[in-house]
Length: 193
Picture (cartoon, helix red, strand yellow):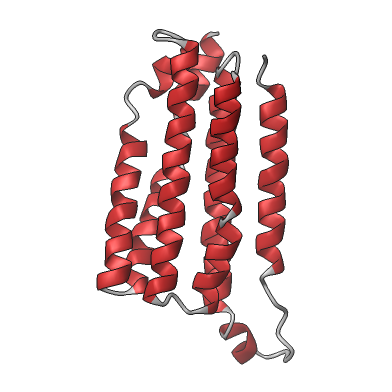
């Protein structure tokens, strides 16, 4: 089967996830800078997670655009990814409301690691279905950035637990910065046909 339904469903779920996250931003009852300043952990958590959802949406779009067909297993792998992404509003809110406490930041990092592992699984299942030498294989055959990200998540998780939540958060923000520039190989492969 084609990829259009998988992409449309995933786009809808990601839009809902962003909507749920923004609802966690509570409006201050006082029109003061002090009241706004108290929101910085929740707001900064939201910004980081919004960036992550954007990164997943962008890379998912490119990956599915290059793929030609999906299987039932690929659909389940995609649902697996969407499950972990759907928990981001909870882990984001938990971390922000608790001002980057070690446990909250640790759980946020675990959530990010599980999202990355699920994306990697989806990518590998699509590559296995499309075959060696396929356009998708040419793009992701050597996915060093994905594997490095999972390593940095693991280091950030350990840092959040053993050092401080803010140190762990720095690792998670660093991974987001790594992914802000999309994989240009997708565009080159799509252009070449």
